[in-house]
Image 1 (cartoon, rainbow, N blue to C red):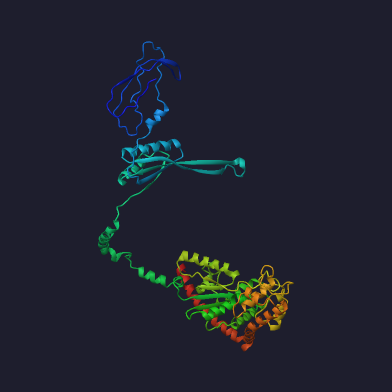
Image 2 (cartoon, rainbow, N blue to C red; image 1 turned 45 degrees about the horizontal axis):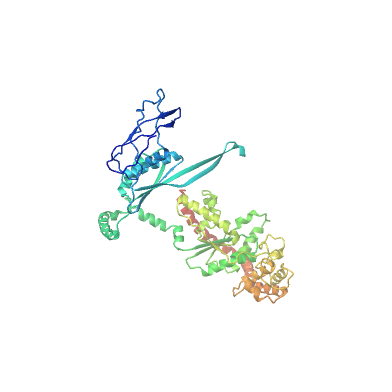
Length: 557
């Protein structure tokens, strides 16, 4: 077998090595070779200090006379270790080590990926770019299952797996233009099944900010002649559109314009403490604290009450009682607009507009704020969604109302502290009407459900009945103390004395409302209530017609 000697980069004499006869193993036969092999050192650059490889294979045609004739001469092959050194691409060393480009290559085939990585390294060498790599990156494994039948069971599932192999090549100390030429060359000769992603870094010299002022002056001189026409259309309708947008209700509400407060109550008789503390008391506070520019609309939503089976004339009586209660708690008909829902209906508008738009009655009044209880907040979310959909389709014409939650979350039943106070409860002792006589209030409070512990403490989990009474006392407390604080203050009282104190506090707070309610119901045989309702109806229709005209114009009716 021929032996190859590594020589330095200079002219060397010819060396003849005569190997001894040996047995050579081939795929087809065995043969004995005695030959002389001549090697010469070539003048090639010694960049990676690797063994010099002859440019031609050893000539095995000139054999000795005693060679076996008639057999095919075996082909000489170099060892794999020698071939690996010879086939390794040439590289250049970086002087400063400043990264210029990171090239990431991806493929599903490792042979194609290794081939193209070798190609990229060789291209970088001949362009004078110091390249490092390829560095194997973590592979990406994707697995999924595809059903092969209409019914899903294990035998009909076919599993797939795909592995994405990645290699990273980094260029250091490379000129930006040369790096771009290298990347363009790789894109031009891209191997099939190979994906590439490159991150290129560019560096500027320090002090670049000093030249920015000079560039700004040049840019200003170029833009100045065209600056007068910048952002202006030839039609000149920008000012009109801006003015139209500023006049919309949604823009006024968003920019802190005049506020519109709307709320309603269903007429199911005289309101109880849950209605008063959860909504009605807050209406009075909003009316007293609102600015003069704020509009207030409070409706008796009688159309919502017809869903219940009622006797003839019962709904009419409930509407009058509810209207008298609103006036008795402190609502001023000259400051607020109080009306019945049925008297301010919009049949002509509902005939053309989707009924979902007016499912919430405050939308026609462009209400910006709506005071509701905790259990009604989801209905207001639906109203906001309706307004958003309409504005998206026809433009910003309607206002999405905001929620104002009452400080009193929920007033619980006196007979079942786990349920809220309601008129639908069969036991009339479970609720206190705001027009109840003091004796009725005392009797209901004394019959309120508590427990066997004859003391006062605020423990909502273990003593819900006593905690409910402490909540009622806190709502009517002039010092606005919390139920826990009141529980500590009155901890030395027994339950009987505590209930007497609670009933007395509630009776005193509701005494003026009860007396005013009785006066309104008897005044002019009810004509005053009709007069108040008529004034509120005209105001409500006037404000709703303005919104109705905007909606019709937006839709195109």
